[in-house]
Length: 488
Image (cartoon, rainbow, N blue to C red; front, side):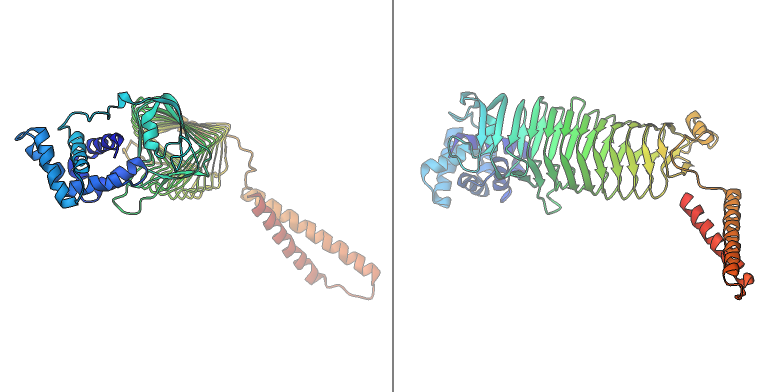
């Protein structure tokens, strides 16, 4: 029994509410998840809740003095749980403290702890290591460093101060969670998370959670693997949020890999994002995404989706092999796509719709199933020196039913003067006829030469020119068609 467990119980009650915390088994579940392991004290607190201690503390707090109430309820636990008086009083005091009925228990005040500059967390409390990441985050001083030794850890950790959490290796340090995010950052700055595998392990409809939740905070995530989210991998929210994700792999998420929302800013650099059921990256509601030297691929839906005044800047990135469009820019959103390739998506390469705009500069757009680029008449599309090899640019009506006569200058310019590309244009009908005739003549002349030579060499053999010349003509047509197809 320790004072830190009482603080932990208070945090659970504040986050989830008393009625959720006292449900059978829920107290044990949430305490274990926050701490990262199951302790005997958690079992005792959960059993005390099942015996109605928390409800009785709330009901009777105004009718009798706190000390008398605690002793009365402790005597009940002594009989029902077959425990000693000291343990029973500790259990009731812990619930009274968590509910705010009694003041802080002596010794539980966090101000009395000595904050440390560096803490090492391991699976066992040996050589001065902490065996709980929760306690390490609590006891680290602002700006301090937490090093995590190899192992598989389990828990949900709130971060409200600047710090560095670093694993020895992303392959050797795994942190798992199911019903809550692994990390939740609230109203803080200068948080760094490095060299970890963050994994969602929820298996039921109840287990729905992001892996990392960042609200109005500045953070850097580097060299991490983020996988298995029952919602999205990383959820970034709020005007003060500015997150930088570098050298990471994000995938296998039930929703999106990254969601950026409500004025937040997110930079993805040298990162692979793949295999999500919803748009791999979703940017919405005035948020901003910077995609640099990254790949967005193999999604079950769209690669990147912008909506509701969102903004995208992409440089030297690849969006490919997604089962729908590569990029969708919609509802008054804007994008600037440079030096990037958008290819082998099963829908359009890029869709610009609903009063949105995009600029592509020195990009490669090719082998998308429907067409390279589709933009609505209510949207603006600007193209500079890009190679759009899918040849079809579709102009369609938009959802806001803009008048068909309304076209942006950018669309008119693109249709009248399409950009130069390095692809050789396929031959038209006249060119095709000339090619066929040329090949037929070449084969006919070659056949006559062969016939003449054969006649000179073997004058006694009569060649059937009526058979040879038509055969040569057929071969010429076949060769010409093959040439036309290859050029087209």
